Each structure stands twice: as structure tokens, then as C-alpha cells.
Image (cartoon, rainbow, N blue to C red; front, side, top):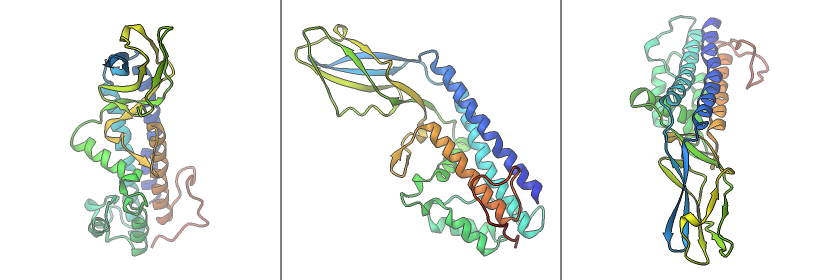
Length: 284
């Protein structure tokens, strides 16, 4: 059944191109400077600096992300179909219409999904269970495969995912009048996504101050892409930039596909990249 695996990897290989296309679309969008700076009074001597979105991200960005999601999720389903064909020696395999790569948040959910994979040997079911999101020590929502499944499901059945900007680097320069000293509020947490506007700085002066009296330079603030539905994700308790999340998701997905290829007694085109098997396992 090598050709079935080859097709799964062919789909997976298209993902990197979609990732690059996403980056190019984002670069074109921000080249038009879609955010402005506003300085507003909080009280007579306290001002806030805001990044304000003037032009939303284009629908094209969401469409490219949709295609990236779909290719990744489908490669998992293609690979487990190939695995079922390999271990049964049949194409189509038994119960072909019910075969789907399981992505589960609880053991009970996995048990239900495993019922649709009864054509697979128990050792393979057990291997699939070990890779489930509920096994993650930080919980299923810290697992990138869980997010891939969730984002792809919402993209298919609800709506495209909205692209946003997220403050990735933060360095603000403020030039007040010569007779004014200012103190920045260190409680402002600027590393966040911008839905409409975002406070990126707040400071208090030693006298009443009007916004037009200060000059603000935000050239040290870098705004990176973000997906609204994925913005709160943390990996091992820490936030990760979208670009890294996408790269990690691609690698983890390939790892799943390579493991299913190994369990089916086949080899990926170009060889294994994420695992180093001592020798191929038997097919059944």
C-alpha cells in the first residue's frame, strides 16, 4: 500500500508552500501600514498610547490559512486510511467510510472513536491512544494536534478564521516637553493581539499634559500575524508566535504520519525525518 502513503505525504508536502504563501500575504498587508498610533488622556496627567487597526486583514489571509489547515488534517486521515489498508491487505479496507484519525480530549471520547477502527490490531490502537491530546501534561488544549483538529473543524463548518496583528516586539519612544518627566506604567501587558485597538503603553507626567504635547515613536513595536481563535494558545505554559506554532504543527503532523507509515511497514518518500526506526515493523 505504499502508493496510499505516498499520496498522504504528497498532501503533507503542500503545507510548507501554504505556510510561505501565508507569510507573503501578511507582508503585503502590513506594507500598507494598517495600524495607526493614538495618544489619549486617561486623566489630566496620564496618557495612553494605542495601536489602532484602520484596515482589517484581507480575506485572502484567512483562505490561505484554511487551505493550510485542511491539508494538514486530511494528511492524518489519508495516513490512517493507508494504515488500515496495509494491515488488512485490502483497498478499500473494511469499514472504509468510518476511518478517521482520532483526536480526543478524554479517554471516553477515544474509546468511542476507536470503535470505528476495529479493523486495526490492538497494538496500533494502543499506539494511537498514547498520542492523544488528553495525554498532554498541560491538558488537551496545550496539544497542537488538538488545535489542528479544532481549528479545521470550525473552519469547515462555521467560518473562516480571522487574521489579526499581535505585538511581538515592544519598544516605545516618547518625547515629552523639556519641563516634563514621565513614568511608564509597568502593569501594561502589550504582548497581545489587536482586535480593534490595543493599549501598548501608559505613562504619568509630573504635570497635566495634553496628547498633542508629546511625540510618540512606535518603530520599535513589531506586529506579527495572529489567528483570533488561536490567540490564547500556550505550549508548555508559554505563548508561542503564530509562525512557530504553524511550524511545530507541521512537524508534529508529519511525525504522526511517519509513525503510521512505520506501523504499516512502508517508508515515506525521501525517508523518515522525525523518527529513526531501527527496522520496519510488521504489517499485522
